[in-house]
Structure formats: C-alpha cells, structure tokens
Image (cartoon, rainbow, N blue to C red):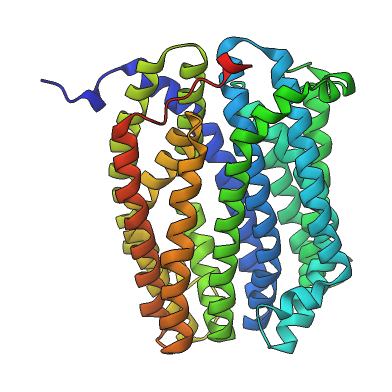
Length: 454
C-alpha cells in the first residue's frame, strides 16, 4: 500500500508552483543579508556586530509586519478560495492601516533614538556609534517596507507568487550594486562604510515599493484596492478580522521580543559572540528559504481549501506536508553541516569567532527538521486553518518559558560558552513546540472556515 504522503501528483505540482517562487523570493532576501554581511565583514568584527544589531531593530519590525500580513493572509487565502475580491480588498485596507502604525513607531525610534536603542543590546560604544549611523538611514525605509509587505502577501495568497519574487530580485540586485559602490567607494562614489550599506538598502526598498505598486495597479490584480475599497469596512468585519489576526500579531510580537532578548543576552556575552551568531544566522536563513516557502504554500493551500468548503482536502494537505517537509529538511541540514567549515571561512573574522560561528551553524542545521515541521505546522496549518490562538500559545510559551530563561541562566548567570548555550536553547525550544504541535495537528481542532462567517 502506498503511503498517504506519496500519493496525489496534483498536490505536489500545486505545492511546488507556489513554494518555489516564494522560496526564491526568500532566498533573494536572504542573499541581500548575506551580501551585506559579507561586504561589511571585510571592514571588521565591530562593523559586522554594528550592522547585525542595527538589523535586530528591523528584524523586530519584520516580525510584527509578518504577523500582520500572515494574519491578513489567512483571510485573503480563504476569500480567494470563495472568489470574494471585495472582502480581499477590505482586508488590504486593515493590513495597510496596521502596518503604517507599527512601522511609524519603529521609524521614530530609528531616526530619533538610534544609539539609545542599540545601547539596550551592547555597551560597546564603537558598535553603538556605527550601528546608530546605519539605523538612522535605513529607518527611512520602514514605512515603505510595510506597504510592500501588505501587497506582496496579498499577491502570494491570490496565486500570484511570481510577482513579488521578480521584484525582490530586482531590489536585491540594486542593493548589491550600490553596496559595492557605497561601502568601498568604487567608480567615483564616496567610501561610506556601514552608512553606505544603509543607503544601498534604502534605495533598494524604495525601488521595490514603486515596482510592486506599478505592477499591481497597472494590471488591476486582485490586490489593486482603491481608496473606497480600503475604507469600506463594516464594524462587524473589523471585529472578526482582529479576533483572528490579533493573536497572530501578538504571536509574532512576543516571539520577536523573545528573539530580541536572545540578541541582548548574546551581546552581553561579547562582541565576538554577536558577530558569530549573526554570521551563522545569515547562513541559516538561506538554508531555510525553501522550507519557509513551503510553509507559506501550505497556508495558502490549506486556507484556500477550507474557504472553498473542502475541509477534508485541507486535512490531507496538512498531513502530507508534516512528513515531507521535515524529511527534506533533514537532507538539507546534513549538507549544511558538511559544508559549514567552508562557508564560515568566507568571513574575515578571528579564529575564535569562526569557531563559534561554525558551532552555532551546525546546531542550527541539525535542528532544521524539527524547525521545519514547526514552521509548516504553525505558520501553514494552524494559521491557514484560522487556529491563531493556539499558535500564539505554542510560540509564546516556547520562547518565554523555555528559551529566554535557559539562555539567561546559561549565558549570563553561568557564563557558558555560546557553543553550548545556543544548541541547548534552540533544541529545547523547538522540541517543545514540536510536541505540542503534533498533538494539535492530530486533533483536527484547527479547521475553521472564516469565509463563511463574513
């Protein structure tokens, strides 16, 4: 008898059609960080640490925006399955409103209090000053990023994942070119160092926003909401929207604050530790892009099936991906382990930082199968099915009841090396999430048809 996860060629065809463009977009975005880190890495460890910590501010914003757009994506996918364009555009209005609000706060911090914000992470004044100069420029892009996110997620969840992929590729190419010109002062441009990297990022994100708006409205895609569409929102719709979306925003917010707390713990363990973790995290993000894309594809397929009234198909998709994702991630993780030494050698850092970075990367690679299951289950299955409150519970308790206390005790109270602290934190957190996630997946309580309630 053929195992259930090997059946249904149509399922895998649809999965790859959605996953590959999203994975490529994630790869492109991860490449942007990799290019930044490699180029800045040529300047020294302080510069790597400064840009890494400055990007923690954006990472925090990124997760809040991801929470908003992931929550709205639940509705968009289910409304798309129902063929309801009017409500898709209403959701866009709420997504943009929330994104503007959150990004505005982060922009204020980046422009008005850059060094004070970075002082929370580290006492190294050189790192704070360098990071502050980077943050005060790149902060100008935060509101633009919020708008780009809203439209990109809407495109993904209306079966248009190739559009944001192509536009991200153009933005990354722009960023790489201006990084080279402005960091090192090539072809007559001034050598601006970390400020050059920030300016290159600002230019790339401006271009990406302009292009996504041009394409969406030029071709009148489902996300092409006019002002009247964005504000025509009944109070009952707003209530239902926030009942489902607010737990996702809180989920990403609490998880983001937890991850930021990790960064604070690592920063207080030393500048070299920050550099090592930043290098390993950059590589890990590139290794995970396909599986993150798979989780978004899962959210679309599950949500679309539920919105169309095909709950049994949604459950079938969830079970297949819960097996296929981790098995594939195991192979990818072993490849990363095998090449970890060569990858880390690309960075111009001290031997101690190189050793720490390789140890952190190996730990991250070995936990990839469990992390992949958790991504697919929480972001794809549970959120796609509208089970946002339980998703919040899993993520919040994993970070704040396990990860952060363990990291604080081992890293700051007991002064253990990062090569022990990081693996223990990441393994304990991910295994806990996996155990709770399996039980919820098997219960079937995550299936909720939100489109029927509108």
